Length: 302
Ligand SMILES: Cc1cc2nc3c(=O)[nH]c(=O)nc-3n(C[C@H](O)[C@H](O)[C@H](O)COP(=O)(O)OP(=O)(O)OC[C@H]3O[C@@H](n4cnc5c(N)ncnc54)[C@H](O)[C@@H]3O)c2cc1C
Image (cartoon, rainbow, N blue to C red; front, side, top):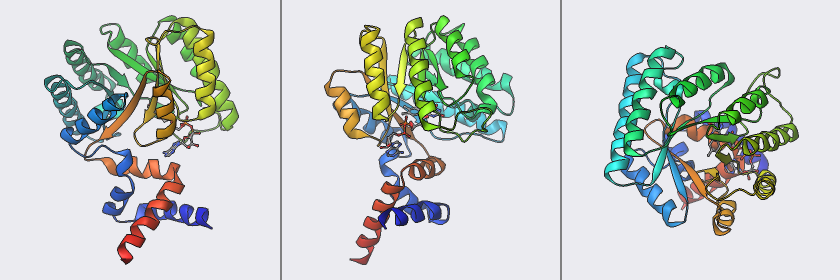
C-alpha cells in the first residue's frame, strides 16, 4: 500500500503548500543563494566530486527576465572566480530568451561564455525540449567557433540524436550525454526504455570513437556498467570522460564510482525558482516523496 500513498503524494504535489514541497526537495536543491550553493560545492569537493552550478529557471516570457538571468549568471561567474570555487556552470538557453529572440539569446550567452573563458570556467549548455534542439545546437556551434570552454547536451531518447552525434563527434565537441527528461511526441523520441538505453550506449560509442570528451549523465546502473565497458574498450584515460549525476540522486552509486577513481561531477541547482524543478524531481521519485511526506506528518503529530 505504501507505493499507492507515494503515488497519491505525487498526484497532490501541485496543490501542496510551497513550504512543504520545499521541505520534500531539500536534498535536490542547494538553497536559494550563491553562498548556500558554494557550501554544497565545497561539501561535494570534500567527497571527491566536481560540480556544475545551475541557476534554476527556464522559459521566461520577457526580455527583462532574460537580462536578469544574464546578470545572475554574471554574478555567479565572478563569485566562483573570487572565492576560487572549483565548479563549472550549466545554462538553459530559454532562460536567456531563446524562445523570444534567438539573436538576443546568442548575444547574452556569448558575453557570459567570453567572461567565463577569461575566468577559466566551463559553460555547459543544457538541452531542453525538442522544439529548441536545432536552435540550441546552432547557438552552441556559433559559441564553439569562438570559445573553447563550452559544451552541449545530447538526449538519447531523441531519434535525431545519432545524426547529431555523428556530426558533433567529428567536431570533437564536448558533450553531456543523458536520456532526456522532457515528454516528447512519438515521432520525435523513443518511448521504450530499453531502446533509450541502447541508443545511449550507441551514442556514447560514437562519441568516444570520434574523440569527444563525454559527461556520462545517468544514475542507471546498467548504463554505468555499459559505459565502464566502453571506457575500457576505448582505453580512455581519466581526463577523457567523466560521470555526472544530479544533486541528491543515487548517492551510493556516486560513491562507488568516485572510490573506483572515476571523475564525477554533480549538477548543483540553486536559486529562487526552485519550485518547478523540485516538483519534477519528486515526480520522478514517488517513493522519496511518500517517505518524506510520512516523516513530515509523523513529526507534526508529536
Ligand atoms: C548531470 C545531469 C544533467 C542532466 N541534464 C539534462 C539536460 O540538459 N536535458 C535533459 O533533458 N535531461 C537532463 N538530465 C536528466 C536525464 O535526461 C534523465 O532524465 C535523468 O538523469 C534520469 O535518467 P537516468 O539515466 O538516471 O535513468 P532512470 O532510469 O530514470 O534512473 C535510474 C535510477 O536512478 C535513480 N533515480 C533517477 N532519478 C531519480 C530521482 N529524481 N530521485 C531519486 N532517484 C532517482 C532511481 O534509482 C532510478 O531507478 C540530466 C541528468 C543528469 C544526471
